[in-house]
Image 1 (cartoon, rainbow, N blue to C red):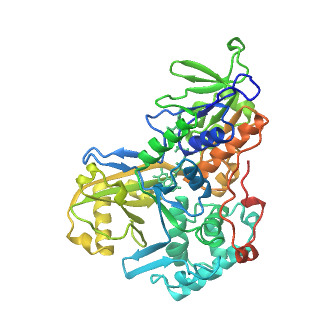
Image 2: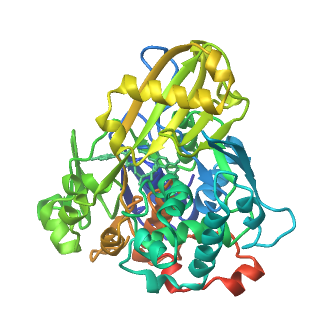
Length: 491
Ligand SMILES: Cc1cc2nc3c(=O)[nH]c(=O)nc-3n(C[C@H](O)[C@H](O)[C@H](O)COP(=O)(O)OP(=O)(O)OC[C@H]3O[C@@H](n4cnc5c(N)ncnc54)[C@H](O)[C@@H]3O)c2cc1C
């Protein structure tokens, strides 16, 4: 890799603080578009990946994800980055789901083969057995109104407010809209902004065929984002410093002789021409010094106060397989999703038993219940959904809750999310909380990283890196769904 500047000058140095998906996406985009830059990524933990990581369960010795992560067909920036890094085959794509309700037989959910978007999911919606005919009618009407309402007319409203105005009953909100919103946004309709809810339904289901496909990693996240993706970045010339917490980002002193910004780490300070801060919203104030924040127009205190929503993963090891399906949606129960371990991820440590994970988003209530009761309830619910589970013996179990899993995308938070570019040309923000048009997701984090790379390149007078606008909308979808500038990504 040629590290000298295009004009024979000293190479420009870029620091990225935070090795989650946002920081890695920024590093990847910069190393791809401007390989002459010297990019250094600082990550406080031993491995990259941030919230999308794995741990070794102490009782079984098994490496499992803190929480199962799922991408969708509409996550074009995440999937594009992984493909560019040779990791396209690290995911399995499923074009159908199964909904389980304790009082009804399971309902398969998959798009019609011949209907164009946005009509392609209508027939399968009509076959969800746990919904009444009246609820299905309400959902069709609500979906039509949603498509015909421009985002800007939804500003300041919660999803629950809009859904009620759109004639949705409490039962329909609970059984349909909240099932999707809690999974996608980590919050139910009373808490989330309707603009964010519209984004989920329009981009994730209605606008394009394939958008709602579910993609599940074949490898533990610790392997995918903690080893393989960083290896690919290193091969591109990115220097990665793990176990290196950045104590602060500030202005260089005159004595330092460096005109840009300095970052302070354990063994001293280092000067950089450009800095991308890609730490979570609640840690920004610890990293950016107050003077710098004031001059750059950052409000770390306000952003740290963004409310957070917890997500719990219930990890279960049984003495035998309990379900043939790789995943299932569970409705009307504490358990919301069930995932089995992908066969590719079976390792020697899988001798601990047959591993399953149940995910519970917006899990505030779970945190009030002792873990053994949560485990007992979830195992009972699995026994109702999957008869094989009734005979199985539970060998080990663990509940892992991240209390700050995602920020709550309320109407107030949607308005207050910061831009990537700051008032200072040498300082840029990345992270899923940055204004991307996306909720707190892997896709949102990757878009924010690409936005930050584009902002760095602009500051250096270079052409920007590309950001995928998402899947192309079908012709009928373009005609039926109102589209506008609010949906586009702010850079
Ligand atoms: C339980 C759970 C389930 C989820 N499920 C899904 C899902 O199914 N699908 C989906 O798309 N998204 C999901 N998400 C959301 C997704 O994980 C995040 O949106 C995304 O990973 C955020 O990436 P990020 O880079 O913005 O932040 P982070 O992943 O938080 O990365 C920030 C990094 O900065 C590092 N850091 C912090 N301070 C410093 C410092 N001072 N110096 C150096 N480094 C520092 C941290 O160690 C961390 O590695 C889930 C999240 C959780 C917690």
